Length: 339
Ligand code: ASP
Image 1 (cartoon, rainbow, N blue to C red):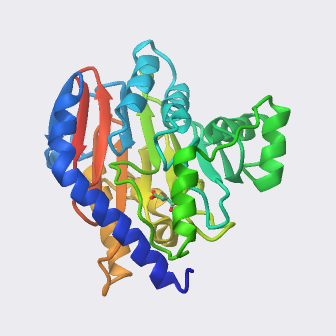
Image 2 (image 1 turned 180 degrees about the horizontal axis):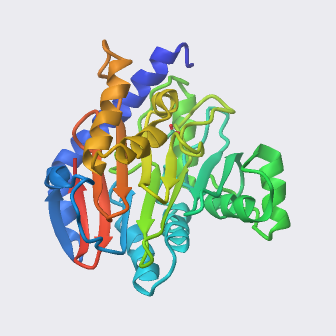
């Protein structure tokens, strides 16, 4: 049972610690398996001050964690002069459709009642945005979010209404609980502790940011949220300003980690505003993490990862604890960045 907020944070920390341990052991190996890998430290981005006059190197796509198939898909679109909006939608769809990714879309871990509920949002160069929360039975919440953005006067649709809306646009009803996640859930139910034996993975929510040939920026974010969450819980990922924010004059930002902390600081909006004030993407992400930690002075028991891109196509990422990675694709190839 989840007894308190503290238990929820403890659960998150345990999963993060396991993932960090895994990352420590496997990052270099994984990077070695990539087809065109360049392993870089995000520290290299530290001199990317947006005040410097830098010729934009476009296009660029980045996403949280090392979802290299997702950035490869987005790159395919960008390199053919497609829009950043199409690139981020189709990029994150790769992870939504991947049943082996148990933190996003099909095969995402369920809530404590055994229901897989998905959250996603998308934002374009004109500050149009769409979002779906607590969406069941639909593999591609990001595409439903895009339909909300483009075909309704609204921004957020939730639950049954969002599902009904999706069917009206031809999305198919799909059981999102896989054999694997069902088995894990059944095991979790035996104790119903808000801590579970999970597969150790080096990935989580996917937040993606892209800048296209025209210099236009878009972003998308999609997740199944915290595993075994209280039914009805919504995280930061589908909330514009928290899990994702884009301002085409400045840049974009996205987040992964304990959504509650990102919501409290309106994290992605904050990072874009910090870039507007002259900080580089790297500096802005570092300040975003500092703001969160200033509000949690006595705690270091949770993870947040921020990722940002600016109008020059420069990127940066930062996190509370070492081990956050992000995937990037540019003309120079695909890189895994370890923060
Ligand atoms: N931010 C997501 C949420 O709170 C989960 C995550 O990225 O781990 O739902």
